[in-house]
Length: 451
Image: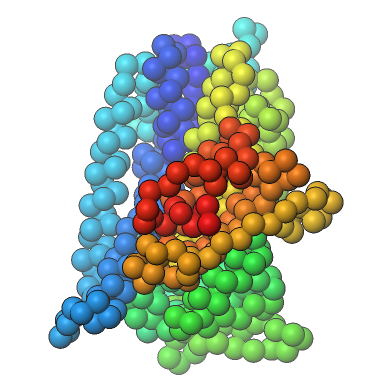
């Protein structure tokens, strides 16, 4: 059968694009070799956020006396936390299975491979599974996601060194946890397992954690996590992981000297790489770099009619970015203008406290020589924040000479929710004055944006 679109990969970018296309009357085939929902749903965003919630409850119970609630004793059962996480994931996967039964969508399970282009301009996609088959379409969307990176060092693949995937299914809380990498994944797990009772050390190669975020807010987050008891080694390059009698020993170089930290478990959290091995890009002639498949502003590769969205193109490794890129690719296939501005894409860190951003950082603006103004407000002046015992926090808004937002950075409680006011304003070309003149309910955390 000749399909209007073949999508390879059923993560957020893949399955949401399939659904949008089918609702517009297109015939779509979507191929997935593993689980529906991809990394985000099965071993990424959703299960991690489940454990984040467990950590929040643990912290609330630990601080209950401050609110006049006396709890004699409490225990944490990680097995029960994991079971709840699995229940949430299972429910959401079931929801996607239902969505994939939408008229116009054909779901196939198996390994997809591109097999050339016919004289009529259609591409062949071979699906190797229980029932091998060949699909045809003039439009292919590659949405194969990403895989965990490993440092090329001694001991990186030894027992006792795990990735975020294994962290989500631990049967016991490690007494000592060493996290290699101070990016989003590393900090979220460091925050979670500190609440669960682990002694946590984070070793980060860069001078500051979250190197792609605003440096000011990243430093504030690191300082806050340090106050919670997490130990940070920044500007430290891990060179080896050794087996020792009572666990693991992480060796790193810091300020020209060799140092060590010991742990019972080591989390390798040094980022993710485009999942190119899952599809024969070389044989197909698709251009790519170390970062991922090369695409233009419409997500189209060097081969006409073939698109790449999400982590596999390396532009922005976020589930919501993949979904937005899918809509851009679909619009181009249909000869329509892009429905969204991919430059305005929020990013979030679900630590305690949270951190979120949208747009450019001060460092980026300075490097580009762009003049800007900085507007700051602090949670400690917000009534709702004080009532929540969440006075630690900062809002930083960067504007141009006309007051339009160039970037926004929020550190504090519910930052990942508040950032969307700024994202919406940016997408509409609004000004900071318009935000400040918009009435906000009192008392709410959102008032910190207008103070």
